[in-house]
Image (cartoon, rainbow, N blue to C red; front, top):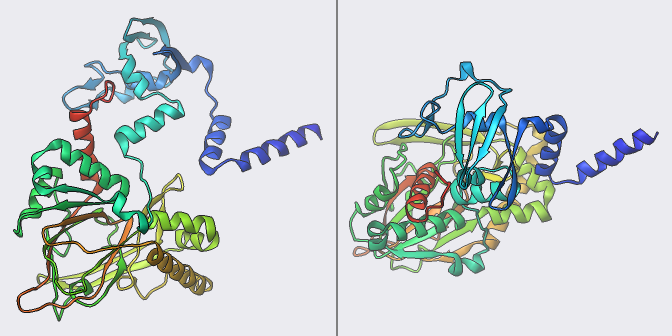
Amino acid sequence: MFALRIIKSTNNFVNSLPKTARKIHKHNVLYNNKPEDLLNLVIRGESLQFPYVWLRENCQCEHCYHTSAQSRILDWSKFDLNVKANEVSESENSVRIQWSDGHTSQYNFNWLKFRSFTPENQKKYTETIYKPKKETWHGKDFSNILYKRDYSDIVGSEEALYEWLHKLSVYGVALIKNTPSSETAVDGVVDRIGFTKRTHYGIKFVVQHVQNTSNVAYLSSTLQLHTDLPYYEYCPGTNLLHYLVQTVSEGGENLLSDCHYTANYMKQHHPEQYKLLTDVEVEWSDIGTEFGNDFFKLHRAPVICLDCHGEIERINFSIPQRGSHFPGPIELVKPWYEAHSLFWDLNHQFAAKFKAESGDILAFNNIRLLHGRSAYEDSSNNVRKIIGAYIDWDEIYSRLRCLKVKLKNEDGIC
């Protein structure tokens, strides 16, 4: 009975932990590190532990690591998972290990500390070099979070480009002002980052009123809140819209909503509806012809896609581009529509309204933000015209890291 009470007490404690903490606790119970498998070091006054197997695999010598390719080249067929340190010697800035397999490795202390296993150091690595931490926002705070830089700064200054991309990654939206009046001007921004993501709408695309169109975005009527191309399994990460000509009519007003803010609100206040939007798979669709090319795109995913940590990874939302086939059970149809409608209402409630100007390039995270536009009217001397391009987040994060190393390098990053 005493042992049973201990088990019940332990289970209650574990179940009370957040999901990520429960996973870590489970791993510690199942795969508890043995003291003989760890190297203990004090680096800059901090006591740190490093598994021998990890250290040996990450040897930086020329026989194990190709410096110019920055790639591991050790022969895994000869790797010993139970490798141990025969001798450890420390100097002021590094540690030298003679291994049981006869190899010798040397590690810089800053390099080790930057990759150490404490939660604090792992959080620092994640936010410093992996991906900046996102910050959610309500529409009433939009004017405070919208970062703006001149086009000449973005194409001429690496410091300006870094700050602009960093703000774009944190808040999911940023603006470029005073862009040249040219249909190729957006290329200058893309070239500074990486390259565009080509879709069946081309390398770039033009948004203006087209009566017989294959895309409702090319109409001058109200464009409902949506994400672009949710029917792509590898959906474009970021949308760049160059307002070559903005309408002078009262319409054409932009609407932007941070779905991370909305989803977190639903998770707290409407957990059942939130779970439906994260669990129920729906079908996204686009069928038509563009540039003489027929296409029939389908992708299935929930409205709110979560990663293995339960964090939001991608948002899918589009009234026009949601297919008529519902792949889930019939019992979930009505509840799902109610959750979908709540998500729609809340995003409108939390959205920011503003009107981009001619010469602006509006960049926003296409898998995080919903965007829309009010109806407008063209005239003979004012035809609204936008040049658009997509860039994947892989390219943006890559450029951010390169600029981080170049401009704000911290010893140990590389």
